[in-house]
Image (cartoon, rainbow, N blue to C red; front, side):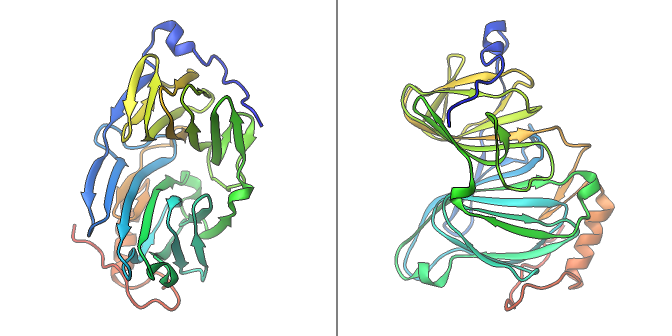
Length: 305
């Protein structure tokens, strides 16, 4: 497949309008030898389309016998998606699903009214040195779907559309773009794509999605003559199609969609339009009213306010 050109791909540049509205430099933190960079939520910007949480995990190297162990914890009001570049994670949840995820695959978990899950490095991956590198995102559910029944779907790598042309290859992880649609069952207008660009490549970024951002994962990307290095989270000007150039090989994530139908509150792993609903979720977790993950006895306690 080749690009379906973005409408008015150079509109912002031609008008002299800056195509990048905001640059966010994700804050880093170490969680036991595993570095995480968080771009959303940020003080400068809480959401981009339905995306309310955007974390880069690693890259990290674990010695033999070690790995990730995220104990069971709850979610409400959102969907989660982990996109791996290296490594493997074993997902277990309170619905009874047990599913490993590997690079190029999608584990799509919708919390809705409430779900509990754990994320761990599988035992067989701990026998030698283990590398882990990926992105974790949360998407806020539309208000009318915040209390929907929880669910889980797995999508194989070969089920995702790949668009290639002119030294650029984009895997459409979720939503719609360039005339293609991902099979991932998103709950609102969405675009989420993993893009590899060879030196000299040119990417048309479609303008049909109301809000969009680019995350420079590797290398350097150029937009309207400005260059942005790895680790830059770029919130794009609404409405206009733009073009991204690759002065050298680079890798980008494109994300966004329709503006959320009202503000969202986020506290720990809970997302809702209602502060009262988050307080109820806190009380439910503290009192043990969420369904447990089968065969798991550990859990993450509710943090102190």
